[in-house]
Each structure stands twice: as C-alpha cells, then as structure tokens.
Amino acid sequence: MTKKTIRPGGRQLVHLLPVLLLCLVLGLATANAGQEKKGPDTVLATIGTEKITVKDFDAELAKLPPQYKQMANDPEIRKEFLNTLVTRNLLYQEGMQQKMLQQPEVQEKIADFTKKVVVAALLDKEVNDKVKNISDQELQQYYDEHKSEFQQPKQVRARHILLKDQKTAEQVLAKLKKGEDFAKLAKEDSTCPSKARGGELGFFTRQQMVKEFSDAAFALKPGEISPVVKTQFGYHIIQVEEVKEGRQQSFDEVKDRLREKITAEKKNKFFNDYVAALKKQIKVQTYPERL
Image 1 (cartoon, rainbow, N blue to C red):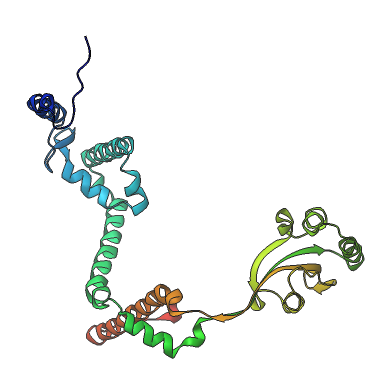
Image 2: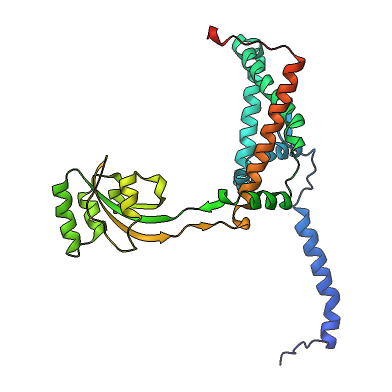
C-alpha cells in the first residue's frame, strides 16, 4: 500500500483540522492544569500564626539592590530568599516572646534608628524632592561657562625599574641598551611593587608623580628609555609606552558626571539654607570649648 501525501490545501488536511484544533485545545488545558493561579494573597509560608504571602515576598524582593534582583529570577535563589524570610520571622517571633523590646540596649538602638529614619524622611521632603531633574539645556550652559574644568591633561603610560643605588641602576640601564627586555628586568631587579606587572604603571598625569619622575617621563616619546632618574624613592629607569595628548572633553562625555555634580551642589545649597532657617526658629547654642 502506498502512502498518501497530505498537500497544503488538500482534502485530507481539511478533514484533519478539527482533530488538530482539538489536540491544541487539550494540550493547552493540560499545560494550564498544573499551574496554580497565584495572587498577591497567596500564602508562601506560615510561621506559627504568621504568614508570608506573595505580596510580602515581592515587597521584600523590591528592597534588594538591582544586581540581587536579577539573581532572584533563578527559582533556586527565590527559594533560598523565602527561607531567609522565614528564618528572620522565626527569630523575630522568638525575640518578641523573650521580650527583647524591653531590653535597654534594644530600646537605645530603636531610638537611634528612629532618629535616622525621621531625618532621612525630612530631608527627602525638604531638600531632595525640591531638586528637580536638571535639563540638558542647564547642563550645556554650565559646560559652556566652565570649559576649563573639562580639560583632560596630557597622560603617559609607562613602565619603570626602581633601584636602590645609582651603580646598580647604571648596570641595568646598560643591559637595556643592549636590547634586553624591559619588563623582564623589572621583574628581576626592581624594588617597586609594580615589578609583578613588569614595572607597568598605567596612565598618569604630570601631577600624579613627583617632579623629577614626571619631567623625565613626559620628555620621552613612545618606546624611548630614560637615563637614570633620582627621586626621593631611589633611582628609576623609565620606559614610555603610550602618550595621550591633552584635549577638551566633549559635552556628551561629561554630561552624566556634570548632572551628578550640579544635582549635588543644589541639594547642598537647599540643605544649608534649610538648616539656617531652622536655626532662626529654634535657639541653638554650642559649647566647643567643653569638648
């Protein structure tokens, strides 16, 4: 007997459609049968007379830092987090049973924590909430008026070998002039912790190093090696690997940093003004000489 092929649009396919639809409906019904509908009041755990619901769980999850919230997508992590909430609730119940709230040290900590919460809430209301989103136009205006703040100074990336005396330094320099590898000699002879990286110092500006070192490093071109340089730390041999010329940073490069800066400055001004106004309403006296 030969097999009949089912062609798209053929009569056989038309006859099979009801069967296929029935299978699809049954499949969906079967898939949904194993899934319990979860609402915010669904109980996830009971500890004595206390309950932890989906709503409670989600509220605690929302308090976590962003990186931990991402991890909480893992079912195993969610189970572990639920266990943590159960343990905390269990310990809390036992603490209340033992009347821990009546302990003087506990009451002191609660009072201290209450002060912090009240102060934080007050500052949110009177300071933070009054600093609106800084517009790009305001940021651009600040940038245009303070361009000198966004000058990126010249930087060099260099290696060095630090030695205790000039004689040893001259001997190492002689080896370098003969073509020996700088990083290899740094690992073997340098007394600086950077020896572990072959003397690598990364990028630095002129102001980040002592004057004698900077003068020598910034006078070199990539690939060049300095003569022996004496500083307060000892005797150096420097090899410059890369040079970044100074330049003006663009508005787009500094916009986010600038937004943080202006926001912080405004909050600081609101805070100082608010505290000054309070001091006019409430008499404050300090006695620093009694410290």
